[in-house]
Image 1 (tube, one colour):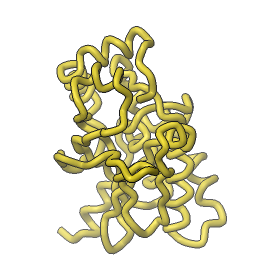
Image 2 (image 1 turned 45 degrees about the vertical axis):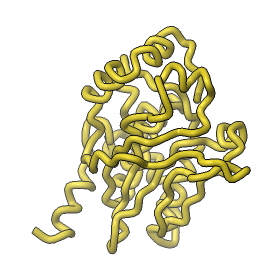
Image 3 (image 1 turned 90 degrees about the vertical axis):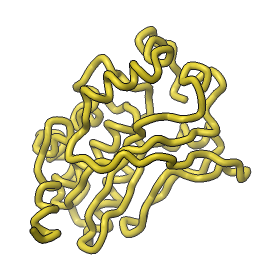
Length: 216
């Protein structure tokens, strides 16, 4: 099977990367309108999703993982933001998939780290898009106000190069690192993530349910 045939899979809608949802389709059409090339479309999609408010996850509500839900609600954490980026890319005709990794977060607040039980945040979600030559890794996670709060430069994306999380803050301190890759997926493994996060981070999930969990 050729690479082109394989990548057709990543143009198809799925339950959570719901690229056939009317809101996703409307948003993708608006973002793609007048674009000169695929790179420009991807840049527009990135900034549209990046600047959606980063907020605490809702593991008890599986629909919160959906791309369409993120666009409608205007808030969410890394996984639905990655799903939204992938869904908008697919709706615009660009093959896209999800990637997951355990990351080390050196700049989370002390209270967040206490609730998480350490620096490692498991199953961080990001997106990958096919440019015709290679897969680009893209993480449209942190919105501009949150980056300013953390004294971290906003992540930028040119549509042609990888855009991972920022490795350093504005003073040169370590920010985040990718430590363990879990592979790529056609859709969000939502039921697994909902159960796994409760298993790994019971205190954090209890705080989220109680509405006591800050953005970081």
